Length: 169
Image 1 (tube, helix red, strand yellow):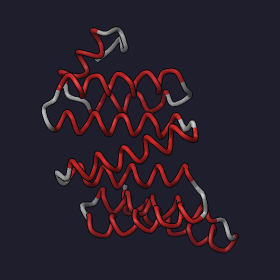
Image 2: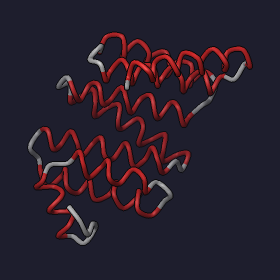
Image 3: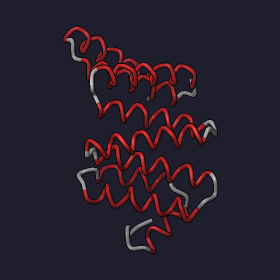
Image 4: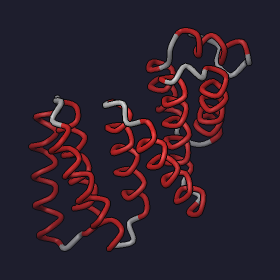
């Protein structure tokens, strides 16, 4: 429930602020942005994502910088701003590659795949999905695999299955 997530994120932010824990404040700000996004408050979500991006940059919290930028990319993708979304996913890809952050690397690649799927560039989309899925399977990010597969079209899921990457659809 996004509204409950907002309440919990506000409590977490308050606790992190009391403790002077910048990374906790950054993450809770991102979670609030995600909750706003989930209830279609895109302008508010963008404000939270921008705040988290700024504060994560200032505190060298690369993991949350990637996470918030990824979610801002999702917002741009959702409203049809594909070029903006692609730029944001590329930033995440670059940061995640530099820091060897496999979780956010998989997210960035999956984000790119979603753009190409939206643009009906199916071969590119499937190739990117394959890359993201391989990273998820090779790391401890396995809990993310069902989410990736659930959000893909039947065509892409079937293609990944035919490539031997998944054994169910």
